[in-house]
Image (cartoon, rainbow over all chains, first blue to last red; front, side, top):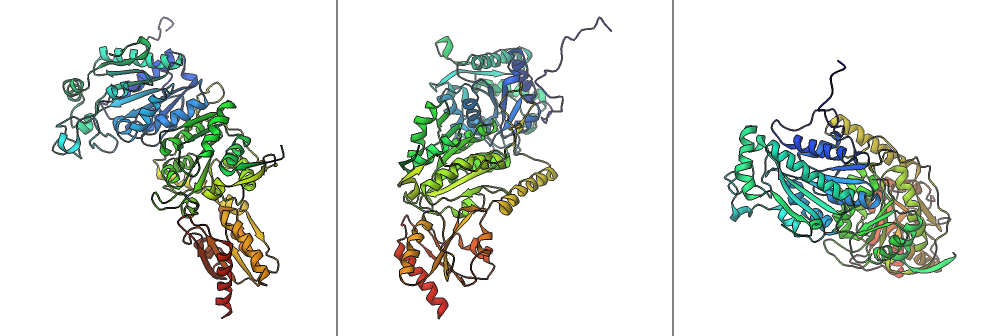
Length: 253
Length: 355
């Protein structure tokens, strides 16, 4: 078989294990993008990932780089501790919408505010997946969850929080973009954004956050295909994709 | 260097630098502010890390990250701030990371006051956060002792891969005393930190810092592994001082600033013909149960003196198992007991047992 050649293989930044995610969930795709970015930028052997609390809590077993598991919402603080002590390391956090948008909003804002040279991978699926489908800060109006059984209302729970827009207002942040992984074209675009974020960190140019619009078929009560359609039809209109801050380009969108 | 006159909080800060502290993360709170203020200047000047965090919760999680990356890390706070830090402290203990935490205690509960207190005794000696863990907890009574113990605490934390708590009160934080920073402290037998997750994969295989064990058998084994450390602390590293115990007929049990005042009280008692000793716990976890076995047979009454409502009494009862009469005198709210009050408490206890 000397004329065979490998045209595609699993990233060496991912362990050869079964991921703990549900069928149709986009965490797997996002993991792949993180892994490929680390390899392609040649920063895997100095990377430390921070697992948070939520569906991705176990991803310290999925990435092949050093990993630290953080308390709920505290990943940016843990990352700060590592990065300040080891400024040449590449530090990323991987956080969901409950972890970052709710309990950990202070840690996320202040890591950006201090201009910590780190990258946040923020996965927004508009629900608490791990705990069984409770309302998240990003749950849409009318969206049914186990703690908004009649659908979220503004009067009872407020309007969904737009994290990318919020983080873009922080003076210390360098790069903020919202992406989606609902089709191959957007996956490629998302990878470009993530690579850019890691490149900024590699160049010691400061704080970056990439928000991923993600799906949760199980807790949304949909098939994977329907969940993707629902994200496109409902989430993206409320959470528009795009670059919200690019300090290096010298202008905000 | 010889002795220098320094304020407690600043002396403790310098002691941390002398102890090889690589990084400090903290949030302002009275009465410990001079400690981070001092470090903000001197850590960065020495190429070390200083970050004023957005909250105590963030500070302790920064400690977790830096400790997980192999740093010798310090945080300091005072009672309400230490309560906030419990989240991170239990993760640090669970993930087996070394860290030093200084608690300059003030009165509580709630916002309480800003004057000296020993009101966090239970919180400190029972772990403080969720789950089965303990902190090796040292309660110095003077600035010199605080400096020596802080220098050594980084060794202890590294040895056990467990947080060490330095439990002082606002009195020690705020007072000035001459201190010698060059006292030799015990060097512990430390292994290389081959477990760090600092991203430096050229030096070591993949490491994971973690306190999550979803399999009950794994978690039980982890709990038992942690217990072994605490058992070792209890068996081998209780610390205490017996003061004026030879020929004593009665004894005070007191730690930290309170034992300092008790030293004056026993002089006053001697003038009245009463020979009173002091059993001074230096470790409040592990509690120095061994010291109680060394009490002279003549001592039947123990007067526990604290700046709280009697939080140490349970430990004294456990250590003595009903062999002694336990009395108590305490002041709270930030009021420091006078030596004369302690004298009266001892005389009252002695009178009661002579009736």
